[in-house]
Structure formats: C-alpha cells, structure tokens
Length: 89
Ligand SMILES: [Zn+2]
Image (cartoon, rainbow, N blue to C red; front, side, top):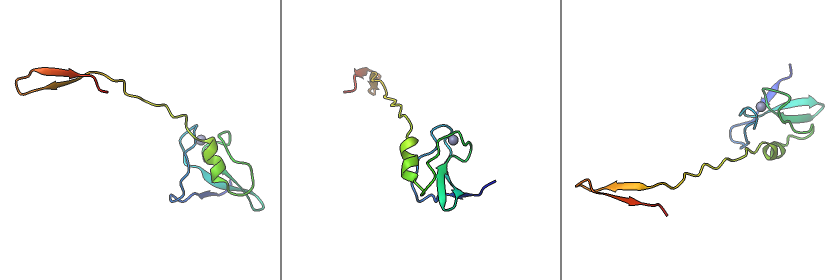
C-alpha cells in the first residue's frame, strides 16, 4: 500500500463528488503525484504529474442543487391574535 499525503486543511480543496472524502495526494511514480479520493481508485483522480489540486477541484464541483425556499405565506399575529398574511417579495 502506498502512503498518502494528506492535504493540509489550509489548502482549500473540494471533497470527492462521489463520496465526500477529502482528497489525498499519492505518489505514483518518480516524482509524479496524483490527487485522488482515498476511498476508491474509481473516483476521480488527476493525471499523474505535478500535484494539481486545481484540476481535482474542477472535476469535483458538486452539482449545486439550489434549494430555493418557495415563497409561502407568512402570518403575523398581533397581540389580539388578529393575523395578517404577507406574501414575501
Ligand atoms: Zn470518493
């Protein structure tokens, strides 16, 4: 088993889009590295060469599912428990 180099927390990198793991750097040859998922070789890994966290990041951007909260009525009650409905703008 090859040793992995853990990427310092100070370096921002995206998590594996398949399993959410923080990537590691693996030495694959003489001075060649890949940035890869520690859990599976079938998850994305960069081409062997220089450590290319940028490339990893580009390939592991999660499809951002925008969870827009659908506008719904807001009810406000006053002290007499009369309520007014607002539609948020
Ligand atoms: Zn993974």
